[in-house]
Image (cartoon, rainbow, N blue to C red; front, side, top):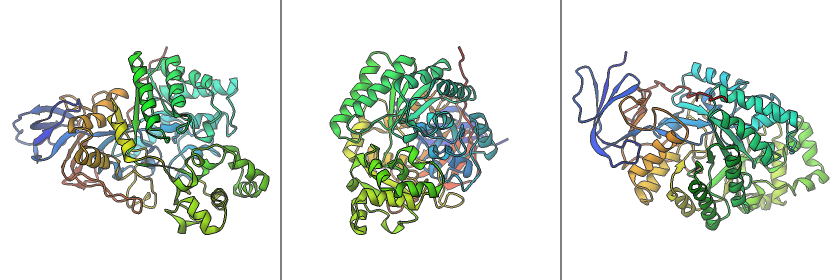
Length: 527
């Protein structure tokens, strides 16, 4: 039995957005025993928190850590930023249920193939996660990308009746095994064929089980408003809560205002519509999303032959996708084995250096790496800081990493996901400390109490007696990010202590090696 811990004299934020007070927090076991002006028990471990903020642990409302937490459960990039819980399975991506062993990797972020294959069900995923003892708590959505890859495959068409019924059964199973809702990634090739009727039918399954619908909308460029309106319409027809993922469109401030107003109008109608945004001024995606999914069928030789065919290539260049929509001068190479020397350059620059069209340069790169399609990744330069700050100012906007949990050494040392090491720390440094866009209490509410309420994280997100002891103690003046485009894997600093279910994960700014995370499964409500 661990001794009680008294965190003494800190600036206490309860997670509700209330004004803070100077006081103490007593941890007993895995829970908060008391807050206020407290006397330390004789056997208590004392932590002096004067000058520090004491708050509920941060909740990453939009994470892609599904698979990386199985590979390395330490979640170093997350805990060093005060994160105690992550919502995974977003954007229709996730490693469970992994239904199609040949195609399923298309909808997984992480070094799949270098490690054991993902689990075939959400129940198996939670079980595997439990055996690895993650450093953070994990709640999962059921990813539609895996449902479609398992039942429809790569064809960009509506699901047939039998396929849709199979998807509904699989979604129901995932929900009954603890999934919090359905997620879609409608800009991605594996889900581009999904119709509104198909999505309503699936969302109704989640609704009957008390879940929500989270979506990476169909078009985040010139039709961004229509895409958000479609998401709201799906949720209203299915009668369930909606979470719009990284809502900020890639088409300017007017579109941002329109999308936010659409959400606010839905709320005024009494519909529970929420949204989040990440903290990067750019997007980050696989180069493979340049082409429709059928172009990637077969082995590496078949893919190379297809991409080398002049007729096929001409057709591929007409394919609308989230990469070419940005314009080649705004698409930069993040990583590539075949063209590593061009990392950081735009494809307009790469094409000029190679003496070819930028689109051809990208297709050539994809062909060269056909045996490892999950490796080449690109940066989409799409936002300004002004646009991000406007989004954060919007009522109830939540903040997420849109990244995977990583560690600078160990099995994930060579992996990169921009934002992984610097999302919450950038948010605090830039949005709270430097620009004052949000107050301390409001910013902490957006990272704690609000996501806990939206996703049903009972007993978390607030500092109150009886709640789980997910607690961060950090220096508000020095909590900061260090990761850059050139060096994306530099950890954040400024978190002094972190407790996950009462387990002391960071002590004096240093990792203890102890891991206290659990799977957060949501009880299903069947009808």
